[in-house]
Image (cartoon, rainbow, N blue to C red; front, top):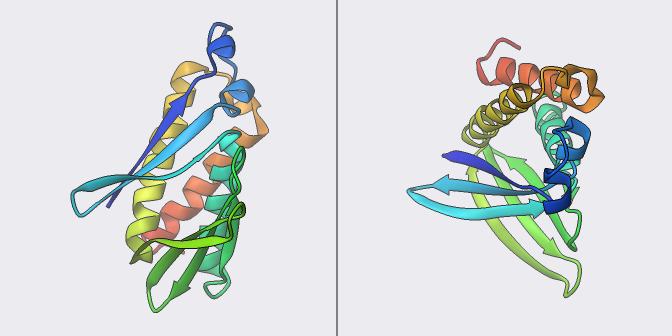
Length: 158
């Protein structure tokens, strides 16, 4: 399993000098490659909030007996529920507009976390290449801490 984050820069904001806080407001598309097929997983603006919430939920699953969690997307009525049961992660999407619930995917929890933390780390490093003062941003630092915690869980250090 692999994951890929694709950032869609806002045309007006992209013309300004790079700022981490502005970058975090851009729309992000998350794609998952599973069994040789890539499909869109979710899309949201204010993507820093989505990433921070997803990482926090995964950390809590490790540390608090696999408690389910929900993430709401910005600019849509989608809600994603992450549920752990017997080493499997089930992700369902609820469409608030019409009340439809769709199972997005089911996969091994460890595979999902490993794919997420690999892409989260790549994304995090790419921001630093754009702006060496990225560590002045509170959310950027929170992301770094989450990446380290998740890496430790994936590697069995914690």
